[in-house]
Length: 439
Image (tube, rainbow, N blue to C red; front, top):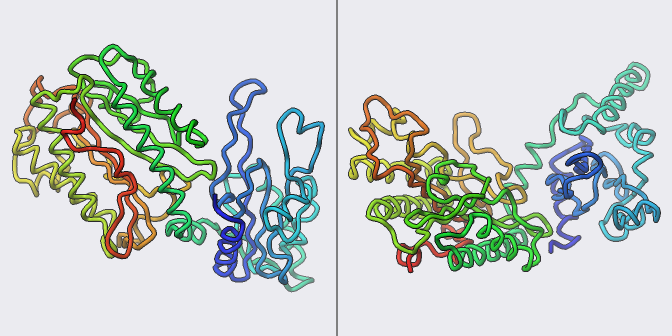
């Protein structure tokens, strides 16, 4: 787990970027599932990154304009044995100070009366508008009060700004201790994929394979799946976010599994593997699998400092298009096909995304006209695929799809950390060589 000292270092870096702007960072709320039953609590990732505090509805204030000893303030639910017997332990105000490094902690009920005083003297207020309906009116009221008093006091916060760009730039570049946690998430996730391939066979239901995967996550101490596990046999794999997971596995089909675990401190793994249910590729399956694997390996090799996520995607697209032309699934000049996007009925998504506390993690991919340059500490997925079905129309200048190809969906995904020497594949323990996919 990440130490309290690391959270303190993160707060200090954030405070430095804030300058004289005060930040209000709310925790996540409990979300109703139905009636009076809530979904399992999931902390807001920005709040977690700065605090490590895993209770709902708390609010963190980061106050660089205040003197030392008053710059990190937490508002939390107080200790309450009557409530805790129903919903579990609370750290309360004393725990917020002693165990989570808050300079000062108050009961959450006091936020409305204390917020304006804490924000007083700041040159601006950093708060994400539109996401926190309980806290937003309090922030706006406190700011309005400053503006009303400005003619007499001569001071007021000059504006309301989003904390996201500053905070998400920090989150995009993982520190060594974060990479260790991600290695652990990837280890557990890779083991689950290996188990799934061992048990999968014709006649099982997709859900039975999902159960094996998610049981391993829990047995290894993870919170559970990082996202809705995709266990898609045959043509179901051509539905990118298929999560029904309730169809029987058929002899002769491929099985696509996109699944990863989330650790107790929310770091995630995200792996996709595709293999034949009966352990034997058909000729068409083998051709397309080899092509996707070649594209994925070329894209992984393109991950290095100074390169871009856009360049990684372009690498995968070119390998896929060249291979599809060779197989007769596309027709024409490779550059022209890519420029027109005439391949997108077969490959319609990007080749990856940032990974961290969120599965689709924060951080810009472009700064204006320029793609973001990869730097050590960034972690991204690399996940090209091919999905051959009738769901999307074939472009007019492209050949009709022969029946023998239809219903084949393949994606291969690894989690890749950029380092000074190039990259590290965090999910290498999940095998992907064609020989390993067969039995």
